[in-house]
Amino acid sequence: MKVICMVAVFSLPAFCSAADSIQSDIPISVRSVMTQRVGKNLIRVIEYNTEMTPKFSVELIKPPKMVLTQKLDVNEIQIEVNGSKKLLNFPEASGIYITGTAIDKDAVKFQVEYFGAGHTGAYYLSNCTMSLSVNRLTDPACKLVSTVVNK
Image (cartoon, rainbow, N blue to C red; front, side):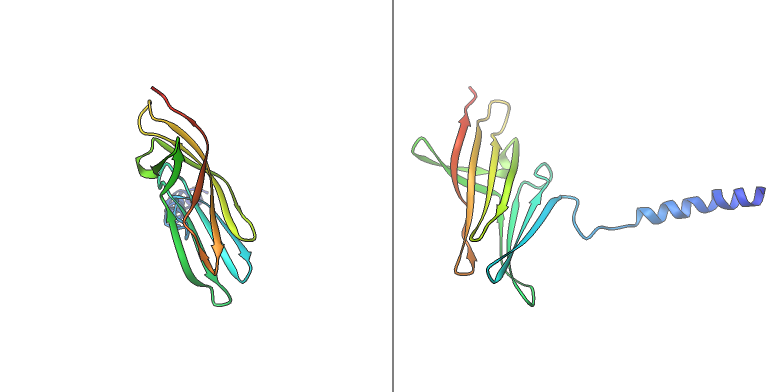
């Protein structure tokens, strides 16, 4: 009985170290992946954990051979604030959240919550659309929903 316990104790680290070598095909920075057929194409949306990787990716895939025909990494959006265009650069923000992602028959829609740098930075909430036209995705067209400017 003592031998069995010793074998179990000595073999246990081998089982534990095997678990340490498991690798995922999906990077830890990816929060979710959504794929949907739109017409003759597939659209894949990759949402990242924005605290690690402040971006959002959209891919256009052509079946049946699953050829990637377009990839757009969205790491900034442009909005209009009080008649002026404003560029919101994701890596420069204190926080960025992408929510409400949906793929419909001709567009990818999502909402961006942008928290400006520092504790006095402005907050912007925007609705964005990337249209699918002639087998190409457009850059995001975003409309400001609300803003709070801290002073």
